[in-house]
Length: 275
Image 1 (spheres, one colour):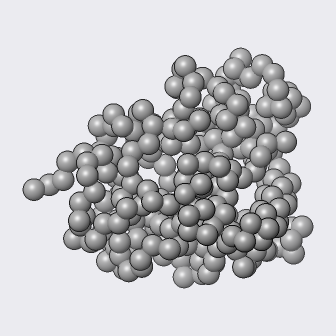
Image 2 (cartoon, helix red, strand yellow; image 1 turned 180 degrees about the horizontal axis):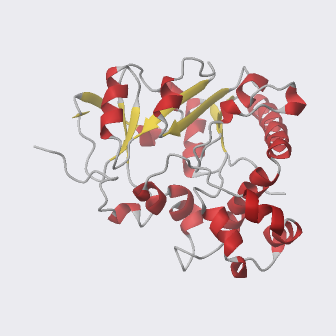
Image 3 (cartoon, rainbow, N blue to C red; image 1 turned 90 degrees about the vertical axis):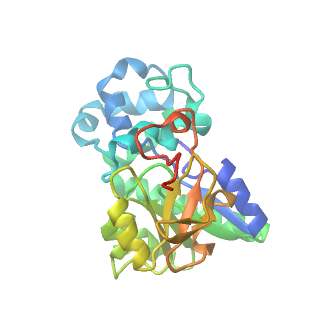
């Protein structure tokens, strides 16, 4: 069974300095899992192989994208595929390692039986609640470490038809999203803090959300400017606890992660600011 949450990634570890235990849930981004099912010659052994063989015909029909609002540059640079341990492969585009296989397996499990998958997530969160209490830390969960799923829309049958935020009302959740509708949803769960992610195509949405008092995340290849689009910039690489950021229209500056992002020319990464 794959591990549901990472508490040892570079960003998760930074949370410790702020008194938090940060659990991040990673899946194979966008349609990576779907492509893996199609090109099954890459899956040859281990838990991923066993799950794939047992459920092949169902998976061919069921597996889709976990990043509904992804752009071309977002897909091509995704940190969930090309940075950190996931990026430690000889063939950056098609290679597999334990981290990539684990993320693909979780994505296949999600599409195969979303209710069973959410039951596993709930179990893992309850374990993290106990761990955080033992460490005298506050728990913070990020469900979309490398995906963009509107988890608030999925009801969990085994938990009284509640969504995951309702199941754990005392747990703080944070996430990034490219969905303006999620950002502006008046019924967004109170314990879910969202930061909008800028891409090469949504600059106007960013400005609109900033003007309405929401924070946006921007990847800068240059030094962080004092302001962007007329709004103050803060350093978002200090931690991943976005709910601690100042509120009211701030730009959360991030540095490019991974080899591909550090060489990006699509406009996703901002290398030069207008004079």
